Amino acid sequence: MKILVAGGAGYIGSHTVRALVKAGHTPVVLDNLSHGHRGAVPEGVLFKQANIEDSDVSAWMRQEGIEGMMHFAASIEVGESMKNPALYYKNNVVGSYHLIEAARQAGVKYVVFSSTAAVYGEPDQVPIDEDAKQVPTNVYGRTKLMIETMLKDYSDIYGMKYIALRYFNASGADASGEIGEDHHPETHLIPLVLQAAAGKRKSITIFGTDYPTPDGTCVRDYIHVTDLADAHVLAMNYLANGGQSQYFNLGSGKGFSVKEIVEAAKKVTGIDFSVEYGTRRAGDPGTLVASSDKIKRILGWNPTHSTVEQVIGDAWKWHQTHPQGYND
Ligand code: UDP
Image (cartoon, helix red, strand yellow):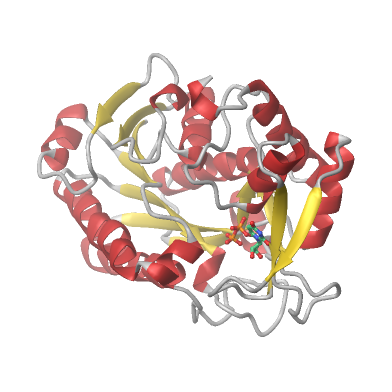
């Protein structure tokens, strides 16, 4: 199937493009390269540099014969969303409206959407399943929930089928070492910790030590990007085979505190580095750990790369082979 991958030059998008090729699909990438990297898109994959809200995108989708769309293009930083909400409403909500509407007008039947655990906010219990209340504690999560709502209405009323995948903490890198995480500025924990290990920053700061967790630091569920990519392929195939619109959590089911990640990174890299303790980052819930039973049951998804050692080990391989990211 010919599948448009919006944001396919980004971190999760580029891993999914490879998984689509491997599964025999034909991905076509749309990315404005504001954060993505041309070098992350494999040779031989059609690439269009454009914004998701550009007025000619719909005609282009029709011309290319796009049947399914995966939508990764978004602003993704919790901290930034709490300082600059306008950017998030514009890029995520308004941008997604234009892209989804363009897809509808082009006759695209299936959409797989990058959603987030941030739609749940502070959970009443963990692990979090899909029936948990959805009260996001940050602007980023609110924008993603709004897009899910839009997709549900498009599905109910126009019959455009969708699956929203609520990622917990995407991490790791392709085992080849050829593609990985390269954000500017980097805000995510594992790449920052590895930059500290590599001597590229003088320390890592832990945001908050007074959370109601065993060691006082935030607990997250780190899921390998290769396992995420595989879930997108399963989701698209499911829709193409007549599956119903719905949403799924994607996590490993295991929680690690920030301190535990720092310790694991010291062990995997064999390098000691300096750690500082700072205040909480606005909008961060204490604990987010997934129950992914629903997607395992319905799509047969099974994460096979998501031990903390493999996640950090594969990310470390990418850091070592590409110390300047895609500029190397
Ligand atoms: N974090 C931290 N120091 C950093 C960056 C992140 O302590 O320099 C914490 C952050 O507060 C959160 C966890 O690490 O509890 C994961 O944050 P990240 O930004 O990687 O992902 P998020 O949970 O926001 O999706």
